[in-house]
Image (cartoon, rainbow, N blue to C red; front, side, top):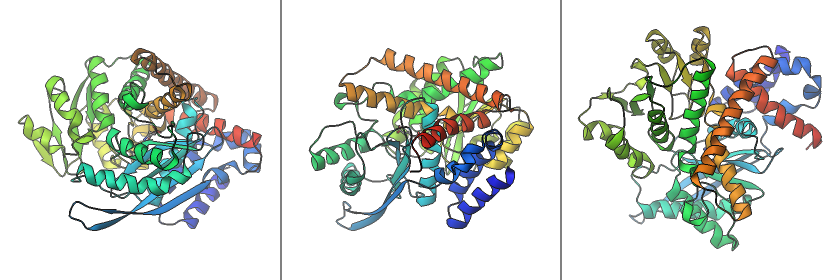
Length: 446
Ligand code: 2IT
């Protein structure tokens, strides 16, 4: 069995040697699947895994635009349509200088399993551009978004592919993208999620990833007869996910003491709350400003060139980006008394880090389960758009909470069933895989 899995992973690497993040994501899932293939040879016979690692479609395109100084700029746009077995492609758009095809494919691959876990009818996709939104004016962002959509519009649609935000794409960008899509197709549809609420967005969508992470985390603690009350938490990113995670963690009685970015971190021993949290909320999502500005504003120490994982904490919640927490950081966290870790970002822990947590017996929640509340609420936005109705905050929040509880339960039940009790990675990967794999078998060789 391991030979079969190794051969699929080796083939993926051989085909696209440079796509290291994609290899990492594929390997993590594939390794979890050994007990599935052992019990169910039909998946191997139907070459389900081989089909899952090959995107149904990849679109790459030129995005030319004119900056405020009148100079022509050229970026690259992507949309990876990974799998549509259980619904239209669904997943965010990332605008960040690090974006490349390998990163898009890893994110699209993760999204397939994550979306399956939500129990809503959504396939998986991801897109974006190497455009850097930092230091750009509103007008530059608008012209970029209009150019990006001028190509993307022909590949998406409310029943085909429904993008949303990710790093560097929030309400402002979704607005510009939506406006251009509507102009091009002359239809007002639910083609994007994460819209502002006065024109079709869902209440709670901005909060959903962060709140959902806190709900999942509280379930993990409950499963260990523990609560968030009085816990100290270290996080990294301070965008949409990080700030709303802090808000909900505070409600649960925990204290979040760090944020950071690629340049360093700030330690706030009293916890990020009240006016400090209100200052932090728009810092990245609206202003695209560095984390150091938080330290400067409140007279806190800024630690240059280090990640927050050196700060002692009960719980670590990486909220920024892929591979932001490596094996060394994991060892430091464990040595400093870490008790739980959940990934709010996509694949923020390296395989070495995950191994350290596993060896130490620390419950580890993988991103595709933990952060699924964001896309789940996008699914709820799609449902509301289709009905031409809007649900109240309370209704959406109750649904989100129920979905996160179900995901947590499904992970544990599946892990147990396949001989890895308590292993959220195995549970999430197998539960997501089975749903998509069975749909693919039902639909024939396509
Ligand atoms: O990584 C993710 O799940 C997202 N960026 C959200 C995707 C979505 O369609 O809401």
